[in-house]
Each structure stands twice: as structure tokens, then as C-alpha cells.
Length: 302
Image (cartoon, rainbow, N blue to C red):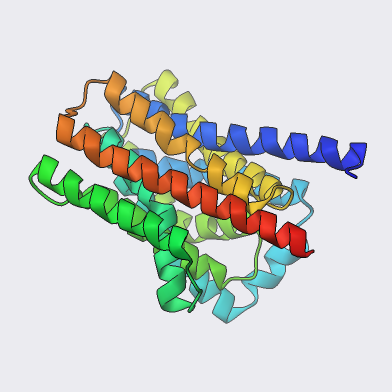
């Protein structure tokens, strides 16, 4: 029988997870507004790093992970892996920011729909994880969806694949680093700020920047820090308290929101492109069902 305390904690974790994925789904609107106020993709990226660092450090202090942060900074192997993960996440961020500000919101949605299926495929290939029939079906449906998307667009959905693969490799690297989400993000921002801060200063000194010339944009870029750190902290907290099946289902909230944003903003959406998304959605549903069933089996065995 579930205790009231456990039940309450689960409800709080569910709310935290929904807030996390909703924030990740809505964040394109913040980047688009910054773009309309004059900031380019690289300017948005460097300010995301600059203001993401203090926000992440606050999260580290709140989680009482200061000793973990200090220990990680003294471990050469850990730092080498975090340099690699910082590079990967910065590439993912710039790809995402550029896409949503250049009329490719639907492609970002596609990328994060297929990401879970790519994770499964990578697990089977790299870590020899065994896939069941449902997992193979989900991967196959995603592959058909990407193929139809290619036909509909007349070319490979390169940005979708770039976003999915860059985050896939980022996840694989972070899997090998024994630090929590907030601590890892803080160190990644600390690594990236070596390049981001000088570039941000150069932009303002050369007159190319907009931070000091637009109070509205300055406030928006400042908010990008908490918008980067807070969802990750909530995700890390919720993931420890919710079943894998629930997290597997909830992760599709973000691409659903970006899909709606892309459609609402009038991006091209042909019938064939619609069919491609139907295959992707079916693959996502099969993935979520498979995760739920695996979780039920694990619970029964326990």
C-alpha cells in the first residue's frame, strides 16, 4: 500500500516533470522574441551560457552539491568528459536556437520525437542492451517517419537529425560522468564561459551586441539563465521519484508543444509531411507503451 507521504511525493514529482517538459517546449518562444528584438543565434547562445552559470551554481548550492562540484573539478578524466559534453551541448543549443529563429520549429520537434528511439538503438549497438519486439517496432516506425519526411522536404531533415544525434552523443558522454545534472551543467557552463564571456564583451565593445542597448532584450537574455538551469534541476529531482514508464511518456510533451508552435506560426505542412509525423507519433506511442510495460514487469518482479 502506498503511504500518503510517498503518494504526495509522487504527485509533486509528476508536477515537476510536467513543468520541466512544458518549459522545454515553450522555450522557442523566448528565443524567437530575443531574435525579433535584434539578437542573433550566437548572441543568444553566449548569454545563455553566461547567465546559465550563476543559475546553475545556485541550484548546486540549493542541492548541497558543493563538495561534489569541487571533487569533479579535481578529476582530470571527469573534466575531460565534461569538456566534450560541454562542446556537444553547445552545438545542440546553437542548432536549436538557429532553427527556431529561421522557420524550422517543426524540424526541432521531429528531432526530439525520434531521440528516444535513437537512444534505444544506441543502447543496443553500443551497450548491447536487448531490445524487444516493441522497441524494434518503435525504431522502425521512426525510420519510416524520417524517410517520409525526407521525401516531403526534398532533402534529409538535417537539422532534426543534427539535434537528435548531438543530444544522443551528449547523453552517452554524460552517462559516463558520475555527477548530478545541476553539477554537470554548472561545470559545462564554467567551461563554455571561457569562450562565451569574451565573445559577449566583444559584441558590446564592437557595437554588434544588443544587451546594453535594449533593456527588454537584456532582461530576456538574463532570464535565459534560469530557463536553462531550472528545468534541468526539476528534471533531475523528478526522474529519481517517477517510474521510467511515466518519464518515457512525459518526455513527448516538449516536442508536442513545439509542433503546435510550428503549425501555429504557419510553417509548411504538406499531407505527406503529416503522414511522416503520424509514423513518428505511432513510434513514440509504442515506445511509451513499451516503457510502461517494462516498468510494470520490474515492479511485479520486485
